Amino acid sequence: MKQDIPGTTIFDGEQARKGMALNRMCFSFNDAENRAAFDLLCMDRLVANPSMLTRYSIHDIVAQAGSQGVELLNWIAMRGALTGRVSKIHSNYHIPISNTASALLALENTPSAEMRQAG
Image 1 (cartoon, rainbow, N blue to C red):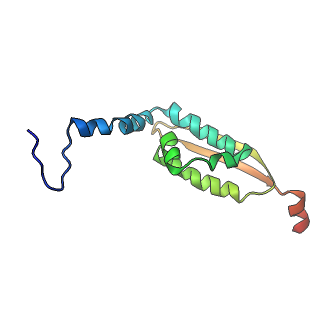
Image 2 (image 1 turned 30 degrees about the vertical axis):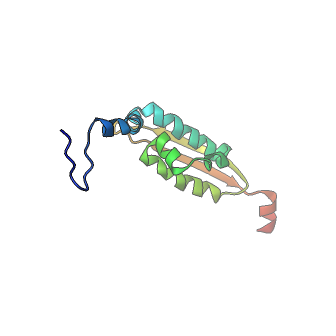
Image 3 (image 1 turned 90 degrees about the horizontal axis):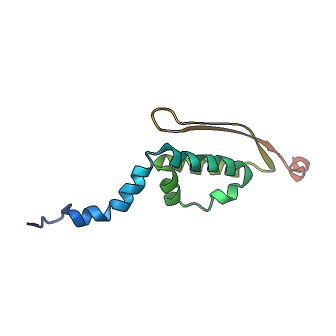
């Protein structure tokens, strides 16, 4: 028997079904491969095609990489500060036993000819 309590949402079968898609998505982040593929794509795009990454909303990033993926916004801002030709010097990606990935990306910024002349 369902009894309403003012101001309280009763968690029943209908409420549980509403959350199934979100729960499936969140559970998928337990699979390191799901997060790793997106992380590695982002590391590559930061060098080769950074504007592609600006197409993702915060919600898209969290859906692809989990809440830790929001740090990608910092990486995009950093990349926006680089001008001219950008090349990768070194990168490393590691998922330790804690399941929280660690990434390192060292970039070299070679200013364009216009930038060198202006400086």
